[in-house]
Each structure stands twice: as C-alpha cells, then as structure tokens.
Amino acid sequence: MEGTVFTPCLEGMKHVKSEQGEMLTKPFLDLCKTLFPVIDKFGAAMTIVKADIGGNISRLEKNYLSDPDKYKYLYTIVQGEIESETAKGSSSCTNGLLWLTRAMDFVVELCRNLVAHQDWSMSQACGDSYQKTLKKWHGWLASSTSSMGLKLAPDRKKFVEVTAGSGDIYADMERFYSEFGPFLQENHKFLASVGMDDMEAS
Image (cartoon, rainbow, N blue to C red; front, side, top):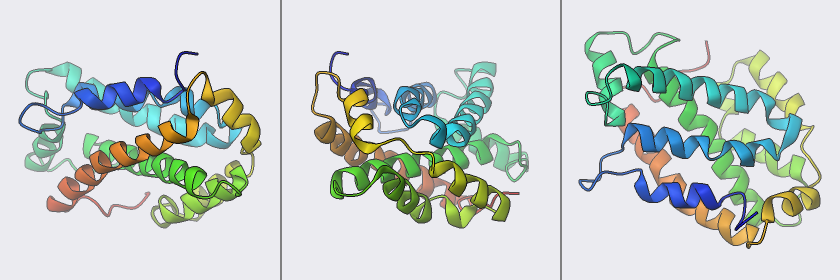
C-alpha cells in the first residue's frame, strides 16, 4: 500500500470546498467514502457504524443525483427540506447529514485518542470516543448495542500494522483529525443555525 490507509482521504480533503469556501456535496460524500477502508480495519467493532455511514451517504447521494446542479452545495439539500417542512423526518437528508456527521465525529475522536494516548488499548480508545460523541444521541438500545460492538475492537498493534502501509500512520491520523474535524464542525454549525443539530435517535 502506497502511503497509509488515510492517504486517499487526505488527498480528498483538498477538493471538498468550492473556491468561495462552500461545502460541495459530491466531494464531501466521496471523502466520507474514502474512510470505509479505515473503518474496515476496525473489524466487527465498527459493523454498525459502517452500515449507518453507508446508509446516510446513499440517502444524500440519491438526492444529489436527482439534480446535481441544484444540489451542488451540501447545505442546499437541507435548506430545501426546511422549506418543504420535511427536514425533521427520520428518513430526511437533513437527518442523514446529521448522523453522518456524528458518526464521522466518532471516527475523528477515535483517531485523536489513538494519537494522544498511545498506551491505551483499542477498546479503551473506542469506548472513550463513543462516550464523547455518539452516546448522548443514542437511545438505550442503540447505546447498549454499540457498547457491546466496540468491545470487539482489534488489537491496537495489529491495527497499526494493517493501516500503516509505507507511511507514518500516526502522522497521517493527526493530519486527518486536524483537517477533517473542522469540516464536521462546519456541518454542526450550519445544522444548529437551522435548529437541526440536536435531534436524537428515534
């Protein structure tokens, strides 16, 4: 593997914004997809998270493909749903973007933990990241299912071996969370501005 498992993601981050600084729909969704190989390396621990991310990307992508010019910018999709009063529905794209962003918050926090606490086990890093990001939004069932799943996290040393390739995995993880995190914050800020950042799992 040329570089690390994060290399395609680090490359993709350069293309997410327009020259005017607006979040572009397709490049953002494509960027999230580059994280599938990273998530796969966590094995069974991330099965639920991966399915959730995949479903939300598909939902947003379907909407984008229905009119690529109209939905060139990510937040246009949400604004359209706000206007048609469909944003709060559980199958809305607004809900999809919110949960996609939250799942990515978890991945970012996990990478931050792995870099900052190199003495932590993988399940410890996963558990702490879950507590800080997804847990408060999950109902009891989702929370207990996720907590059980995270106990299946792989051995940390093995994870580093399979993700490093020919690059510096810790340097790439640090770059990833430093550069990807602000995109997610921007999503939250926009969603909060339209009153949609605090929806809980139904």
